[in-house]
Every structure is written in structure tokens, then in C-alpha cells.
Length: 451
Image 1 (tube, rainbow, N blue to C red):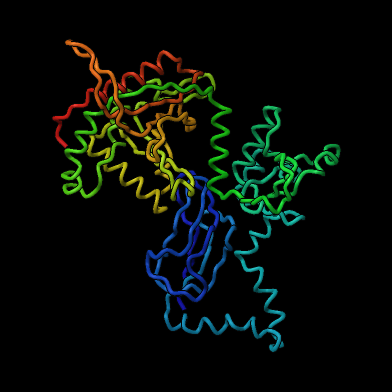
Image 2: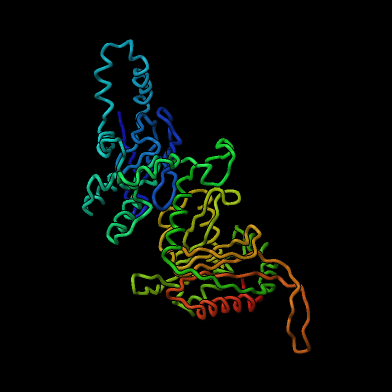
């Protein structure tokens, strides 16, 4: 036989573990080289994992919902076809176990296989699971078992994640309370008793008198939990303020209309409005570098390179959540390079083929709420950045145009622009000046430039 281990892959420099979301193959299925075998989740992105070799899956070592360290085996693949052909016979033995005298003893021995032992060792007396990474962080920070038990897990089946532990440690050091800590003290228990069970919605809390069976309870999936956590943390971190402006983008619209078919034929992908907005904001960022920064304590870190994040909604009407892939070194690209990067990253996001490296390092973000017809919005800053730019729908409106011979009313293509920024370091004058500069760049777009 030639059995090869399939291990939890390393999905990025900072990724130390992954959670099995779904097995696409089962025991006994054949797989080709690079064929998708399972889907895993990290704290950065969900990814499909391809088979490292061709063969037949003879054993699955990590169940769905289980978190496994990078490099640990998750499945066994038999590459010898003749050996694999005989593999189903042993798998049928447990079904016939009652008729086999010698089965009872081997079965307990096989159950705690080497891969299962570490998993069990991560559980406490109550059967609560703690990943190796969580226990490692707890050990380094001097947390005991009581501390771990006091942390309310936000992961699958209440599992304590790395973020939960870090939030607990941060709150403990600052001496403040945190939602990640459950209240184990006896005194609050009577007050907490009337609260609904986890995952339930209490009709009384919603001020409705209808029976509970008239309320649909929908559990948040992993991505929605991450988005919720990220958004709340951003509002708690930055002093948000939003500034609005509107731009006449008639020249830009005419240019795109004139060149989009040629662009599609020449390059093989569509020319959308997004790269034009990205290009204009990049130029403005070079003139207002403070908006391409982050805050570290009482220091401001101004980034020399521009890594541009593009918010992408997943699924119809965004039901699949939101993700922000990053165009690295966007400040060095021309319009074609930006258009190509936007198209590639959006495609990878929608096909779940982004790598964790595609999602890190962003210094500025654009969100296009106009893609679903909305005119304006107040986006939330993507931490640790200090600003996020928003574009609304481009619509035709009658506007007053000043001319030397007198004002006229004309039909123009107009768009509302907005930018939320961190008022801790960016004042309204600078935020407004930045937005005004973007407006100017869009309105003065050169219609004679080469594509």
C-alpha cells in the first residue's frame, strides 16, 4: 500500500489553524490531483482545499466543524489502486461487528487513533473544545482553566476562537468588561436565569405578544459573525465622521460608453466604473497622505505604498456577506492595471478562491453601494485604516451649469460621493478637501486618453 497523509495547509504567514467547514468528498471517493476535497475556514477567509495527490480517500481524520493546526493530518489518501480496491472491505466490518467475536477489543483501540488523541486532549472535563492555538495563547499569557471556562466562545458550537482569547486578555489587562466573557459568578446567576437559551429569541425582549413559533430564529454563519465583530470593533475604535459631495461624471460616462466594447475585445473583461474611482482616489491619496495611514496608540503610521481594498458583496443582494480583497501596490498601476486587478479580485471573491494574502495589508478602501441602486451611504471604516470612500449610483439629473454667457440647465450624469474618516487624526477640513479633490479629478477626466 502507498498511503499519503493530507494535512491542513498553511494559508498565510499568520494563519496557524483552520476549521473544516465541509468535506466535498467522502471515504471511498476517488480524487484527482488538485481536485477540491474540502472547504476550510480561517480567521481571514474561507478556502477550498485541493487534493495534493491522486488516489482514493480511505480515512477522514477531521470532522466538519473541527479546528486543526496547520500541518496536522486531516485525511489519508491511498495512491495504490489495488490496495484501495480492497479498502472498502475493512470499512464494512464495523457494521458486522455484532457477529464478530474479536471486534469489540480492536474497536476501542482504533477509536482513539493518533490524530483523535490531540483533539480529545484539548477538551476540559465538561467536554468543551479548545484548539491547540487557543491553549498555546492561554499558556503564554498565564491564563488558567478557570479563565478559559469564563470565555464565551463565538466559534462553531460555542468554540473559543483566537479572537475570543485575545479580547479576553485585552479586557483583563485594561480592567474593563467585555462581551467575550461569560459571567460565571453565582450572584448574577438568578438575574440571568430568565434569559433565553443560546440561539433563541425571547418574544418579550422584542416587545411582541405573538407566540414564539411566529419568530424565525436564524443563526449567524461564520462570516456574518466576523463582519459583526469587525464592524462593532471599528465603531468602538474610530471617531467616525462622514462627508458628502457630488460630482458631474458625464465625461467619464461618455468615455466608458465609447471604449467599453473595444476594451472587452482587447482585454477579455468588462470595463466598469470602479477603476476610474480608484484611480481618482489614489491620485488624491498621494496629495493627502494622512488618509493613507493607521493609528498606533499615540503614533500615526503613514503608509508609503497604497494597498487598495475593494468591498465585494457575495451572493445575490449580498446574502453571502461582504469581503474586502486588496490590490497591492495600487499606487503604481495605470487604469488598465487597476481594471484588471479589480476584475480578478472580484472574480476570486465570488468563487471563494481568494487566499488570506489577498485580504491583508489594505491601507484604504472603496465601497460601491451604488451597485444596487443606492444614492449615498455612511460606510464604516475598515480597521486599522482611517478612511473609507463610498460611491453611489450614477444617475441622470437636471443640473445648473455656469457658463460665461449665463447659467443653463442641462441633463448630466451625477454621482454622490461620501467618505467616512477617523476624526481622531483627520479633521473636517482635510476630509472635505480630499473629497473635493476627487470630485475635481472625476469632473476633469481626460476623454482623449488612451485605453
